[in-house]
Image 1 (cartoon, helix red, strand yellow):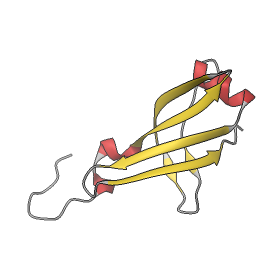
Image 2 (spheres, one colour):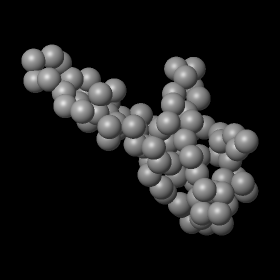
Image 3 (cartoon, one colour):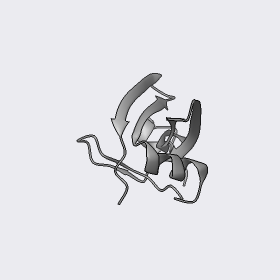
Image 4 (tube, helix red, strand yellow):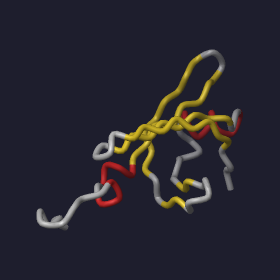
Length: 88
């Protein structure tokens, strides 16, 4: 859809603001992937999809400590968050 030029735009309206980087250490290497936020509950839970067969999916089953880096282009806010992954 189009965004009207007459009303202010915020980060939530930009599709690319839903993407973030996640990094995990794997046997001496750092694996970094771009993921899409499917939902965020405001209490610290980010939901996304990762194929368990992928290199990232396999790394997350071994070490669930990750670092997330999220940039919001309009406000220039950058967040680096150390967290744990819960795989259902």
